[in-house]
Length: 474
Image 1: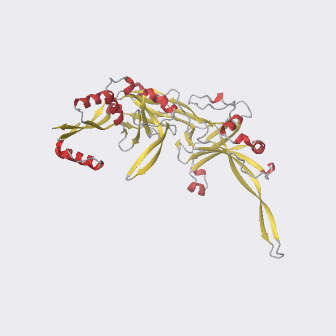
Image 2: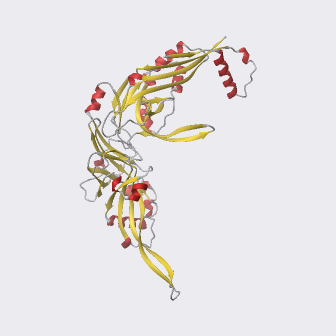
């Protein structure tokens, strides 16, 4: 569909807007320039060549971790565990007067936000925790083999295990109403707690920096050892020390008037180690795609899955857009906007697996470098779009500068100019209010590893909106 707007009234409106936005410009001579302004809006369904690609190695580091297993006929089988360093508390946090005999126990706590799961929350599960015997590399990927970092046959490697469910039904009334998390606790032998206290008191320098601590304690491996049908999103993990303390209270004897001091033993706890964004933490993901998804790929469909699995490469129709622009352009032609909307839909399943919330559109030649260097969409070589549940589509709105640069270059287009990858991502955003505007900034962009998703893109019917204006001088 092609829509054109003509008229001197529109030209007058454009001129008035220009004057209002630039108060320092003189109006002298404005009457000497007359003519007609044409605004061209091209909006049409366009076939965008696309090809579904299976992931090779990708960055699986994340501040949240997946744990569990599911088997979904339409999706496939997914098994998730994770490796993580720990950030130590720089100080013990308990008084030096507390004797070792008062050290009660130690527990590892795994927390999952309520409802942050895929599958059946009532499915019984068991996790096991192992000590690592080698430091994790900073450039760890999804292809990591946990056996390279721990020895399951070593009796000292097993920290403990826990049986749990991710249901809220096991909570007491207060926790059910107020606590935003579901927890799994792993009991750690008391001997380990005593060792930690001794280390803090005799070698406090070990705990001043995460890098120093990792040399003596490389971290933990948490695996799903039993259960199927549920995957939880682990948002935090910490090791807590529980101990007793003497609490003295004073009161006055009503008969003698003397002050009487009594000592009562109370219980307390302190978190010594946590998984934090400052230390290396990586998902170990094993996804075996279903025959359904493989069949869709074989039929030429555009499929995107998470975590890992499939992403899509496309050839953006930049040459067609430039050709149309040049057919109607002059020296006073201005590109106003360019966007691309791609229809998308869920793949029906019984596990509530939906679509990816965000897609990154990045030049194919720059995809790996984008994630390796923690880049964010720049509106020139990379762009993002959120999923619109009502329209059932993703719209990349900020393509204007990309097409302007290609037009101004005057060079013949190469495959590198038009080949893009569509990758599911998670975005961290900040908003800033400026007068009556709210500006959104993307501060972090990473591979989407928060939950399983399946997205079917209709790249055969993408909608390209291209708007430009031209003034004819009389």
